[in-house]
Image (cartoon, rainbow, N blue to C red; front, side, top):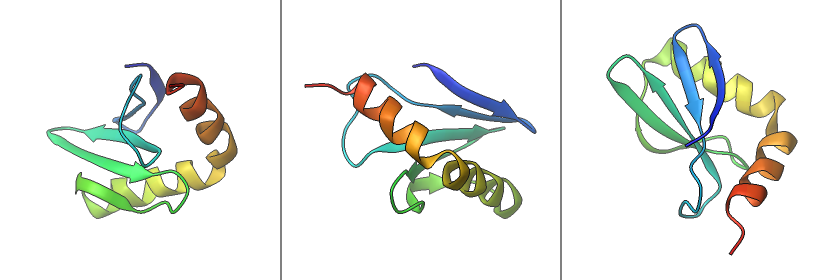
Length: 76
């Protein structure tokens, strides 16, 4: 599970051979959320509002790079 980014106590990861839709895993303290890359919405899990906003902003800013990396890690 490659770490994509670390910021403000938040760790973003993307797993190899993961399930659709394309998403990132964001972890903060004991919380974890899956955020879809294309729609930038919560797919599963929970993150406090402040950290969720930060993750959504990160995904929005790096959307093309994240989609490219998803395709690289999830070639079938």
